[in-house]
Image 1 (cartoon, helix red, strand yellow):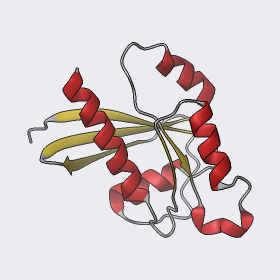
Image 2: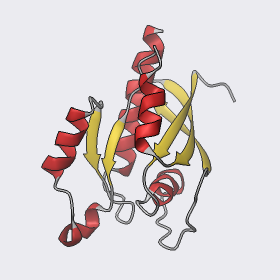
Image 3: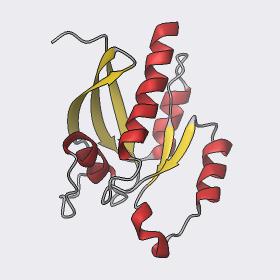
Image 4: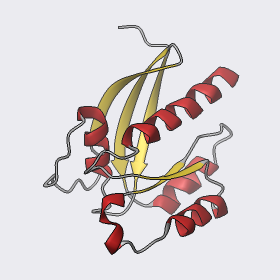
Length: 142
């Protein structure tokens, strides 16, 4: 299969925040509630078509957001970053409001903020579509 682009997507966050269920939901369209905790790396691969461009997304799940942001920010190439608020279906247990999440994303100069639910599928596809859109636009410039 011939791809117009291949991108590696790094999904990072604290243990138990829903990284694996998010990527599994996107790749398989299934919610797997009892997924095994992945400490370190978990790989998923999927194909995406965006505005006539055929893209392959490779994902790895990691922790330590500040460490990764320092690595990413030390790079001369602009790398799009989306802050995702997960578990939107558990609204009554919410600890961080949408407004607070947006404020954090803006304060860290991230590209986008969106909330999702891997359980219901709400915004899961939109997150990866937005990320793919940003990566394709940057790839065209470089």
